[in-house]
Length: 130
Image 1 (cartoon, rainbow, N blue to C red):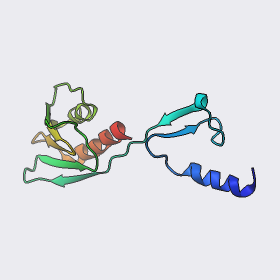
Image 2 (image 1 turned 135 degrees about the vertical axis):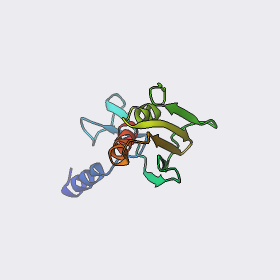
Image 3 (image 1 turned 60 degrees about the horizontal axis):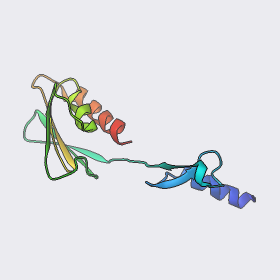
């Protein structure tokens, strides 16, 4: 392999892979069916908005978080099959969550502090979607 091709390959490998891209871990230059694996990178961009209720924030996303036409509501202490809902209600101080399509409202207990809850909300999204 010549120097230009090697530089181009190194540059291509440094770029993030799109969803559904195939690559060979052992030798990225040589793709064979047996040595390929599918890599799916899921990254969700979120934005946290305050609401008129001081005990609730709305977390919007640029992707669908909850499939289907129904909403999802989970209270603290309840279990959920949805990984994000389960992670959010497990946060100490969270009272309940309400999610639908591309947003989730996180409500806290009145004596809980957003300064300790919001970093954990961000971490829950990171763990579930990245």
